[in-house]
Every structure is written in structure tokens, then in C-alpha cells.
Length: 263
Image 1 (cartoon, rainbow, N blue to C red):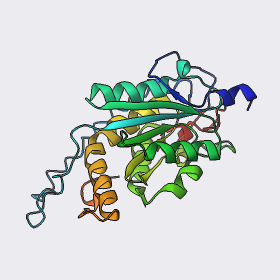
Image 2 (image 1 turned 135 degrees about the vertical axis):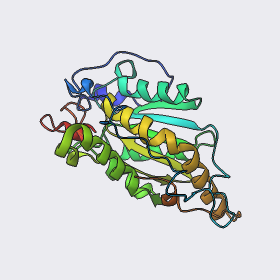
Image 3 (image 1 turned 180 degrees about the vertical axis):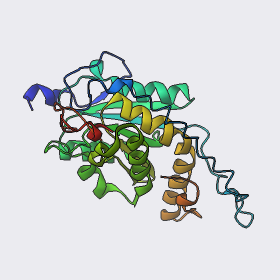
Image 4 (image 1 turned 30 degrees about the horizontal axis):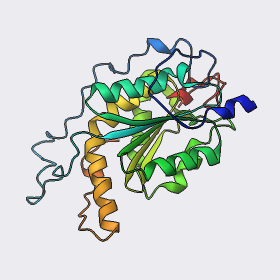
């Protein structure tokens, strides 16, 4: 990666720009996939499982602490983009804001282990940030280090996130989804979700997994943080309420011949 690529670190505004077609996270021809349409696959209704109500466990409301709105930090991991050429980051911002949530901060970081780890760790400690969504760096090239950088920070890992992401992605791209390393967990009481770099993968992850659960998971994560600090956090098992990467070579988020790594 060039020295110029390392000048993009830092806190920036939510400016939206074009998309750089020469990017690991973008696979030409993939835009035809619509993640909002999975072959008639209906959305999963947690309130209707043969009469089993997740909100009623011995009189305890598992959703009592759900956050109505959240403040999210958006982090693009790329050595080849600027925020003016970050369609995937733009998509995350727009989707959260359209859903009534707030984007607290948006940053760009190179495909660098220390840079990614330090950025996520710092943002997770911000008082004004409830969740972090990263995009990029989850492929299988040597430069793809987002999962490796973030995993040591996880106090709690959410394996169901990656499992569900890959299942939904498989409906679109079949076995190529094995190249996906999307992951999620909790860092310092903050939900962290790491997605691939393509805009379609971001749409799938945010619209079909993160948004439906972000209020619940951030509520649970925050209660867990309070409990570890001596508060009275009776933290529920999130698995009772939730169901459960292919890129083109440029910013280190996938293999040019395996667009599953962009999912």
C-alpha cells in the first residue's frame, strides 16, 4: 500500500461521494443482487414460534432495556479509498439515518492490524457511541486483517451474526460465501459488527441483520457493561432472541475470483 493511503486516518464528517470501482470490496456485476429479496424467504418473526413468546420468560421482559435509537460509529477499512469514494460507508450512514438512528462518527482506516484495532478500541470507549459497524478487510488476502484485529477486543463474541450473514449470502451467491469472515461481538459494552466492503454485502448485513437487532443487542451489551462495573445488570442470553465476504483485489478485502469474500 502506498504512503498516500496512510493519510486517510482520522475523524471525518459524513460526506458522501462516488464509488471507486477498483476496490477489493466491490465486485462488478454483483449489483444485480437484491438482498431485500431472498427467493420468497419470509422475515423471521421472533414473536411467533408456535406460541412461544420471547418476551415472556417467567414474567421477565427480555426487551425491557431495548434502545429505541442508537448512535453508531461507521468505520471503513481500506487502503485504496477516500470517503468521497466510499459507497459502502455511505450506504451504512444512509440506512441507519433513514431508520431514525444517529451516526455519531465516521472514520477511514488503512488495512493495518494496529490501525483497525486501535480505532475500534477507541470508538468503543466513546460515551456517545452505542454500536460500531466496520466495512472492509474481512476477505482472505494477506491485507485482510479486520477479524484478526477486532477479535482480541471482544468480551463477548456473537457467532450467530457471521453464521446468519453467510446463510443469507449463500442464497445469493452459493458456495462462494465460504470466503466470508463477517463477525460481531461486544467491546467495552459496545456492539461491534464487521462487514465486508461491497455495497451489496453492507446492505445485506445492515438491513437484514443489524437493524432488526441493534436496539436489543445494544441494550443487552450496555447492561452487561453496567454489571461488570458493579451495577445490577441481569443480562439476558441474546441467542434466545436472535437468529444468526468476497471482494475484488484492491483494498485487501477479498479474492478477485471469489466474490463470496465480499459478502
